[in-house]
Length: 302
Image (cartoon, rainbow, N blue to C red):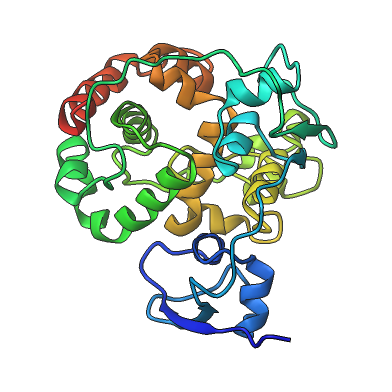
């Protein structure tokens, strides 16, 4: 058996074990075992990890099929396998891309008929460059005290959620600015007691209202939502609900919410009011959201 060749990697701000594993073509479990990490959700900046050497082994062939897991959306699956929602929907005869079910087996490749081409009009812009601190502070001046700590996690979340264009990032940042008062609040100020007994939120156990109150820049609320988001991100948010307020998790939760509601597609078409309705259920705070959106579009060159 050929001995595995290893390299070293130093954990950077905003890193997750999942992102590092993906970069080096391995799994979270393999990386955790290799480095004797008991909790894959707990790594620290500056920690030196053993990782597979980039040239160690050829990458595995891409999968041809995928079984839908709890919390999956077609948008998240498409981003994970570097394809498009339209391509997967076409191959699997899915009329409504928002309706998939757990256990459904999706064909990812191999269709003899090419899916219809969808052309999205996006103005030229820096599609892969991270949002800078200067750009963030133009959009959200009140975020200044937290910008240095939050920005790495924010950029990781946007990359993970396939927000790779200025249009997508502008819409996301504008909505976050309104929902979190420019990143001043990562946890609902109220106790959450008003959610007690809310069966529509899955709050069926005593104390669930307070335990699963709104957290994160787009407030995650209720036992059901904590469970689904946690499964999608590989984090036990039911046992550790406070983690949804931590920037390394909270921004990823916001990214999961965004993709699970198909908001990248709406952002591509600049249907900002439709995004607001899916987040808020109406157009509450429309004027303020629109102002943030205008500034973000201009600042990001969308």
